[in-house]
Length: 593
Image (cartoon, rainbow, N blue to C red):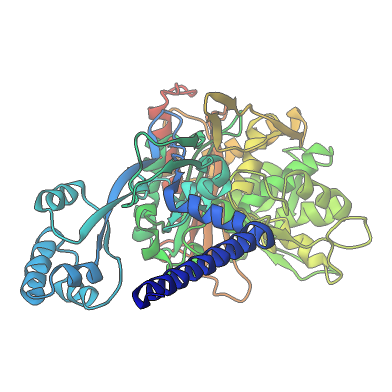
């Protein structure tokens, strides 16, 4: 055979064998993937689909929060974050990296003066793919960066929660903690109604090109987001601003630690204002992480009107009188002999302020004089344990009110053996004699305000509320005033209102009365056991006009230094707020001038 032909056939045979071997290998791999690894093949199909599809999360706009007048208290804005790409910059500028980098940093800093050149230099000296160098920049800065078209610098828009009025109603609203992955309401309405306000995120799946850009002609599917619900509060922001301003000034002038004010609609229980000081700015909540609020013991984010329990002092005497009046055990004219102190065989003696002896005084005069002896006598000698403690429960002490927002329940001690829960095995009769005038019992400002709302409303306690309505994508739910219970009879409430009106006329200095208006009011000055007697809780609670109550107002100042009593520290602030309310709401005077 021709040697050349033989070599040609050998080459053909080698090629044929190689082709056959390749086909056998291919068939083997096909059998492996299609039969032996069928499940894995499915996973590979998923991976292939992922390579040319893109899943996008569609954020739901967070619901807005309004005041009762329709003013926006919490809204949303879109602001840009600024990112740089150090690694990509080093790839794009391998030869003249330092000079180009210097120019880039200089231009960035000129637009973003809040970002130092040293910080930018440090960020670019890494191998990171992308680094955020600034967040929530001003729209004018965003436009400036777009105009510059800086290499390896890009803007990423984000939706931010904003509070147009700054600190106004901050402790009512709370704030939204914002991260790259979630926005979560904290404290106040934002926390209480977070799920409702947040809505539900949607999603979109689209085909993308090799650069990851969505294809306009590609197939896509979308699940639309559900917008967050809008919430309207009962708060009047004009009144809230007035109260917060007056309260802040009073705390500073009196050198107090903190304070709180509650204003309620006397007939419905709707909250008109809830103010606390110190407070915070929810737009910059992180700056207040270490700041304390009421009495320096609770975080400033908590609403002190709902969360900070205190000993109410003599404002509590209205409860003691209500219990005795409602059971027919006293009348406003029932009298006792007040010698300045009263002794008991089963409890320590109780004394009036500075041991002042008032002689023969009526129950109305006990309130006018704010006599501890009279209140203690009513609780110990007339009401007793079984006549006093059920009324603490009726008036809501030791119980959360159920209002929107984090709140405390308060605390008081009551004896065991009567079927009451909870009870204290170490209770003594001294607890009863002191609780009668507001010591040894803790209540929140909203709880004490509800006591006076009950008296103002003919003995009927309403459910306090701060959310007036919720608009959930067109489905509107309006809060209706709700009766909690009849605490005392209408007759008892009227008698007690007249007694408290006498306190307003005779128990307050002329300067703290409101010309043209009758007021039903009681002051309170409490000291805490183990703390100096000049470290007080000064408060005033009451309502007006007394003849036709419209508003309940409670003012509390924690440990004021310049004046330390309810009548001298809290009463002037109470008058200032009450008088402004009458003007703002055009409430006609009920007294002859």
